[in-house]
Length: 140
Image 1 (cartoon, helix red, strand yellow):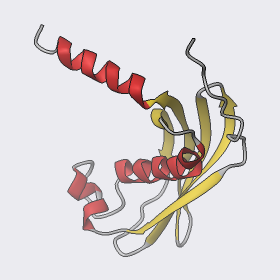
Image 2 (tube, one colour; image 1 turned 90 degrees about the vertical axis):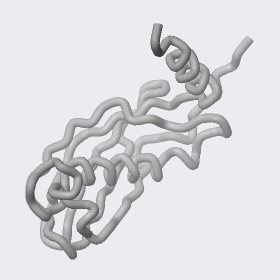
Image 3 (spheres, rainbow, N blue to C red; image 1 turned 180 degrees about the vertical axis):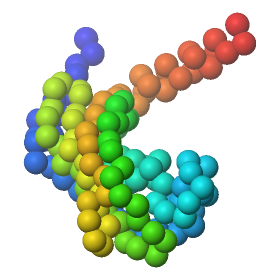
Image 4 (cartoon, rainbow, N blue to C red; image 1 turned 180 degrees about the horizontal axis):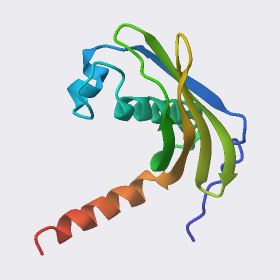
């Protein structure tokens, strides 16, 4: 019988943050999401996801990680080149293998983004098998 590990150490309130100084590689112009030199929305979302991973993945048993399954955020204000921005993620709900985070991003002056991000806990071996099965179906 395949036992499912308990994830009792994942409780609401866990949090982490990830910061960077906006450089050209983080801009909407560079990422193709807009023609301006400000923090790109996809980069802000990546930062939020990274903060969520940092909050929980290190607490999972060997062979388990999380993957993003839902992002619902609003990008409220621009952050110019050279300004520091910090994304924060707080675990607000645990429903089996589904984790829900409140995410925010703030630069040195204001909150520039906020919303909800969901992640699912996966078994890496099973996930790898699914990928290989899908790869085998390619071209059929």
